[in-house]
Image (cartoon, rainbow, N blue to C red; front, side, top):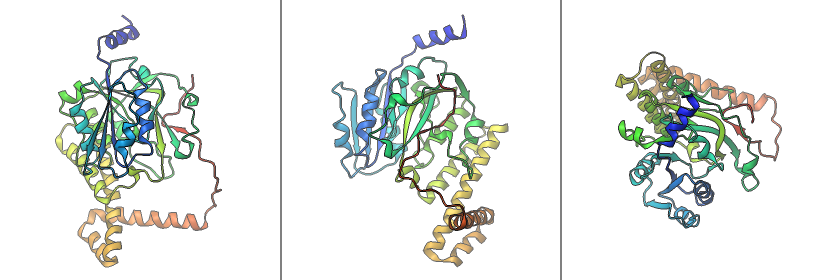
Amino acid sequence: MTAQSRAGAITDNLDNSVCVIVAAKNAADTIAAAISSALADTYVTEVIVVDDGSADGTSEAAAKADDGSGRLRIIRFEVNKGPSYARNHAISCSSAALISILDADDFFIPGRFSHLLATGDWDMAADNIVFVDQRWMGHLDTLAIEKFSPETWFLDLTTFVDRNISRRNRQRGELGFLKPVIRREFLDRHNLRYNEKLRLGEDYDLYTRALALDARFQIINNCGYGAIVRADSLSGQHKTDDLKQLADADKTLLDSGVLSGRAREAVRQHERHIRSKFHHRQFLDIKSQKGLAASAAYGLRNPSAVFPIARGILTDKFDDFVRLFGKKRVITQNPPAPRYLFPGATE
């Protein structure tokens, strides 16, 4: 039996029902389009929307997207509990064999799951992402989104974690943006759920822990997920403590003993990277609230924080200098062209 026919046999014997989970807060303007893109896919047997304490009519907007198929369910929390709690609750309420997360202001590209489910020898499977400036919405033809050749490859923990460390002067392309389909059986077998302490990096944390448990994480180059880039995105409004919680999650994984070699070093580097960001932000918060003396005292009480704080301050000053005296950017009213997480050869 060839590899292709073996993959086909695996797929034929699998339950390919998909539950799409949408955790939403104040997403009344965008959630209908997100839901419609999910309901349009025949593999989707459930769409569970969790309105996480919205104050703008998100639940009502979601209900208007119902196509009458009986697949849409809306759950409302009166008090915001965070994306991890909302997603975990939706998982517990669902029954489909596959779990797929969709952000409330994003969309699926038609035919997404037929590509993702073409093979079945995986625990998690994700596809390419197109990042679209919000100003394109209403004018974007999803059929015009580039079709990349459908080669598959498997993502290892070291590569995944390394690609989640942001670097200066490099366009953001963290693999934590990926929105894989995940087998419920794998999650249940390993008792894996989202870390409910996290309001930042909850996807990164779940995927890292899954890879540490030897999850087979398949990637296809074909583009099936559309991410809307917004200046007011909730993911860009995280608090200082959110950074600490994410660094602590890395530390917990490091202390668990399940990692070794290059994988352990990659997670250690990520933990240091996030911890440095936390110390810098904490220093600035204290300076803003209590003054320079109090912020300096924070640095003295935390010797390991001194270098990250100093580096952060120098970086801020350099950026200020460049903005004042560097080459002026040409301001244009036209939104940037869509870009892709993975470059690749088109079909």
